[in-house]
Length: 433
Ligand SMILES: Cc1cc2nc3c(=O)[nH]c(=O)nc-3n(C[C@H](O)[C@H](O)[C@H](O)COP(=O)(O)OP(=O)(O)OC[C@H]3O[C@@H](n4cnc5c(N)ncnc54)[C@H](O)[C@@H]3O)c2cc1C
Image (cartoon, rainbow, N blue to C red):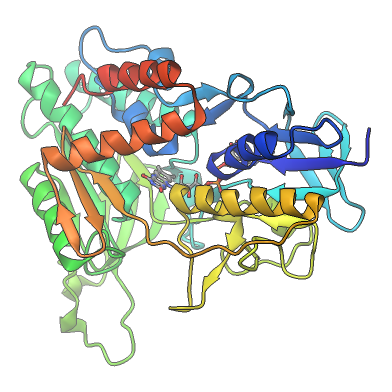
């Protein structure tokens, strides 16, 4: 293989953007661009909760149809300049500039882009990994869907007294999933499949409010909406341990200067609470892909490698990292850039531009630390949108969120393919709204 290789690991938000930009910036075949991913589909993760909770009633969509709303064939998104390899990366050797793949192949690189995404962070809670479902990828979402579907069937047949679902983590993923799930159950109630009281959805959050990275107003809107829908919210409450069919909760540990009475945990005096859980869903945290640390790269507590504003890994001129793999500190507030798809895409544009500039002998550019709007669906045709000091929710929020989804599809596909993909998803995913 030629030595002029650019190897991009991961075809998620960041990796795909680098590949698409590089194929435009480096039209000459002198440089070979490889994109490696273990899956053949590019997953639009923000719609994953729809796969898990999409309509469960009569004529429910098949798993294939649900998956088609958020999965795009990677090869079909790429031009001839990029060679896609569906394989699993098993080893990264930055000194020898080589990548080992599961099928035994080795790729040498001149420039490397690390964009391998994240994995759930269980924070060492005993029993959580073994007993909880997560939202890591399509397979997780389908597994969740099958479990929920099975509970609905058993409830219909009278084999289950109540469906108890506990969701750990009241950030964006936990709130969106809880809101969509309760929406599905309410829809089944309207069709006479389930009755009020047939289910209990509990959302457990260790901090005193939901969506804690957003403003107080956004948190209050999410809380009000979920409580109105009948979701039980337990704040200032941690999952202490998990076992098959049950979970132990505890008030969160006090910070220095705090008193017990400052917590809003509802079982404070008892100090511990056991709850029955037919299904535990863990949405309480993510960390970077563990492969980076396993391969000897220096990583932070969340498994991310430190990069500079050019997206180059510290002390490595030819290795770039982005998205959930990168620890990039914003010098204005000393905070790490958040693990968001929007950040991965923005960082990918800088990485692609800088790789092309290095090859063409041009000046490198820096990441500008943009502020990102957030759009959190809260069940049905409703979403909470936050941008700077602006907050709005309800149907207008949902329309804005749809526009953001469509904008992304237009950025990676031709117009008609993007419109077709978008409207097909909307048709399937709004069946229970
Ligand atoms: C449920 C959920 C909802 C979210 N919603 C939003 C949202 O609304 N807005 C937002 O901005 N962000 C959202 N995020 C966060 C966002 O998805 C991530 O920050 C973003 O995907 C990171 O992009 P990335 O390119 O770093 O990694 P990813 O997009 O995760 O891509 C990583 C790729 O690497 C591949 N890969 C991993 N390991 C290997 C291996 N060993 N070999 C080969 N391939 C491998 C994977 O298959 C994947 O394709 C959400 C996250 C979750 C979990």
